[in-house]
Amino acid sequence: MPEQSQGERLFSPMRRLGAILLDLFYPPHCSLCGCRIEAEAEGEGSVFCGPCLADILPPPEHRCPVCSHPMEALMLCPNCDGRHWHLETIIPACRYEGGVRGMIQRFKYGRDIAMARPLGTLLLRAFKDPRLSGRTFDAVVPVPLHPQRQRERGFNQSDLLARVLSCSTGIPKQDLLKRTRPTAQQAGFDRSHRMENLREAFVLRRQLPPDASILLVDDVSTTGATLDACAAVLKEQGAAEIAAVVVARG
Ligand SMILES: [Zn+2]
Ligand SMILES: [Zn+2]
Image (cartoon, rainbow, N blue to C red; front, side, top):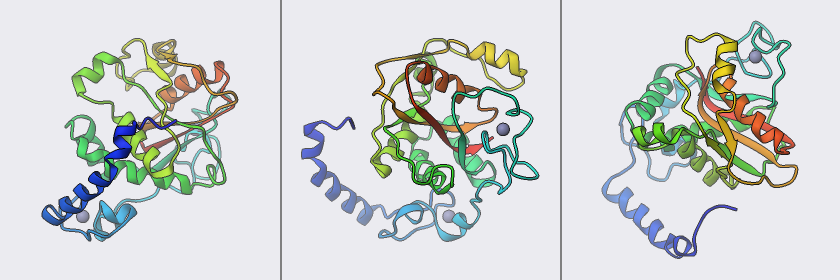
């Protein structure tokens, strides 16, 4: 169930009034270029101006059906061919370039939490992918950070994205996973070293609903190893289906 207390529901009209006043005194601006945008606009138009939106490109059409690595045709990439995955597919919403890349870096390394809403709004594009069409999910589950890393950063970027996604889709966010040990940066490691590094890094925090269909959320994926390590735990504990959405494939 969505974690909304009675108190929060009670104050939601106040919140709406707050939003109207905020628009009046601080009209919305494009999250990329800062230009003024329509206060009444919805969806992506409520966070980006037209020209900036035109520069945010969808992922390449031909890609690996599992990890979405760009390919010459719709075919398994060398990373996925013959590999046993615990999740079905990883769907990126956009290309990891230009403005999107800059926003993700501001979000994670610049600790700019104002990036959560525009990036979370872009994440909704992943639902247009045919691999997700017609599917329903019981829970949106963010990839957890190790508590130490989260204290350093001040927030978990995947959690904030999952909140935006949950608000927009109505799929409840559930913090089902916990990271039990910090994992070193994955870049530069070979595959077996990465898998070794991730093994047993995640545990379940609480019981899954029976035959749960889970949508994992992260900001960026590269090899998909982190997402698959999360999926392995969920699968072991009885999840029926697991897919993942990310803002971009790095
Ligand atoms: Zn703009
Ligand atoms: Zn692949």
